Image 1 (cartoon, rainbow, N blue to C red):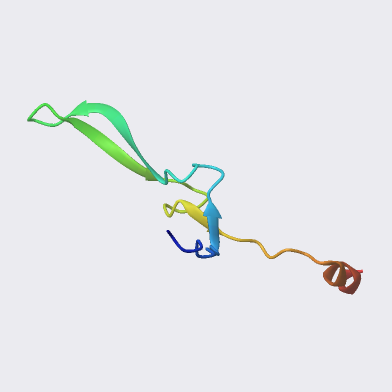
Image 2: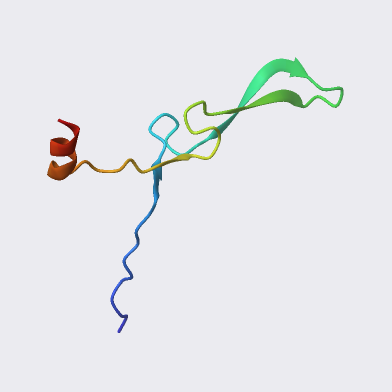
Length: 68
């Protein structure tokens, strides 16, 4: 019988721009001498190639009153 599941608290969230697929390989249309395609590896501009973003702090009622 398995025990209770551990609580997982992550400090990051999946990037909404790239859905976690941070680097894309785009064919440039040219070929190398051996016939393989030349690829451009481009990182996501939002997460800078990590696939995740830090969590934003949640605002509470006390934070709202302090800001007003």
